[in-house]
Image (tube, rainbow, N blue to C red; front, side, top):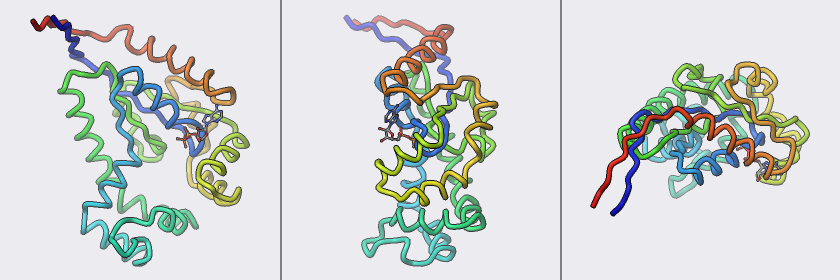
Length: 217
Ligand code: ADP
């Protein structure tokens, strides 16, 4: 006999922050707790990979060299060009964002109707930049100070300090995002501290989630 819990009203939660603030680490932990994670970066990559019209637009804006010879996206090259100045960043956003938001909504709905998840977490650095914060039951901002973020990204992505800073400057300052958050997680401590704070928020968020228990024999 197997007891199956169906989550009839999952909450839709955004996890956001800035580059290197610890979003992916928090989302990995939420996944271990049984939440559905929708990673907007991965979605964007998939969209670029499969949408030929979009690829054409990107080539027109950024040149053929943003794709490798086998047709796959050279993300590093695109990031380098797109984050070199504000106009280029806006150009990239204008091409990709509408498609990205549409795909995220579709995946959110699929997860909601599966009834399998208490929380559906959208991992997106650009929640406020895209003005989609109203789509969510709550927005969690992961905060870390600039020095910690720069150090962590330099190691993670093998980038120079100046390159990390250029990307940081393309985003709304984390201090500002913090003010708009429903929950703030401080990630200036250890990874263990980060997970503990995530556990607490998880407990709080699921405390009023309705479930329908079914017994399958
Ligand atoms: P984001 O997704 O916000 O860009 P990540 O979760 O990938 O950030 O974290 C950036 C890097 O810093 C990763 O390599 C991660 O393992 C590391 N990291 C995250 N939090 C901490 C922490 N509290 N202490 C040390 N390293 C951390």
